[in-house]
Image (cartoon, rainbow, N blue to C red; front, side, top):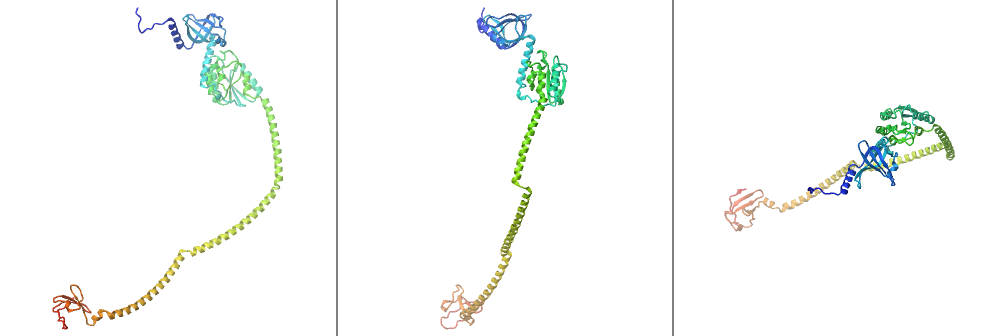
Length: 459
């Protein structure tokens, strides 16, 4: 026979170890119910037994340290519920349960369910002390959720009447055990919250077995307590009995009687304390009044007659008023003087007045300037007449007026003083006293002979 190459050959130990690892990882925790048989306890103190039913059996071991948590004494033939881990005892190749928890079948199932629900609600924070509500010091009305036929309601009512009979108690009748009891309890809690006629809810039940108290371990009751807006007090069973309702409730009482003591103050003690407080309050008030009277008397001695103070204040007021009137008048007089001075300065510096003065000065200056101009004109005219006479005496025009003429060449305008300066045919311009003549030289005589006439051409 040929062994495939991919299949590795293992030893018995290796195979057993692999099986053990597979069991421990695949079944980390198991819960099994069955009958104990072949129970034995060697000198080591560990318990070895077989857990069986009608069709199969399995080895089990309960180590000595775990035995202190047992809720019952194991014995052959006892129906139990075990919770533990699967493993393999390698020397014998036997698989077995290493038991961590063991209890009788009925009670064990309830305890496991209790622990599971407890862990679930704790993880959600329903047991957190921070969410628990404070109880009212003296509620006016209490909603009592209980069975009206039980002894618990009698105990609660009797203690309530003894402590504070004036408080009204409203009973919400429910079943406190059996099928449907948990739903009735939860509905009663919700109903009390809807009606809001009470300030406090008390869950009340007498003692009993775990099965009898199981209604208060139901999740529906725990959820109803958690969502209640009214404070909830649980008084279930005896002091040793702990339910899920006790853990979720805002306060727990060991018994129904203790619940009445918890939610209601003792009326007699309250009256006594009230009387003591009243006495202390009255004494304190008397002491304070005495002290205040002493202070008033001392103040009166220091202050004197208040009416005299008013008279003095009136005198001071009149004096202050007179002083104010005088100061106001003096201030007004000073202000008027200052205003008049400022008005005079304003009038002196009035642009209209200054413009009128300037106009007046301008007219005076114009008149003086006109006189000076006329005087200067007369003097200058006299000088001009004298100069004109002297100029007229030496003026060439005057000579021309006596019959003389000024001769210039027509080409250059040069004055001809001698006949030799002109030639026959030259054009001449002769300036007379009135007008001028353009002439052409016909003959030149350098002696004293008379000049022949030329044909004049008037300009």
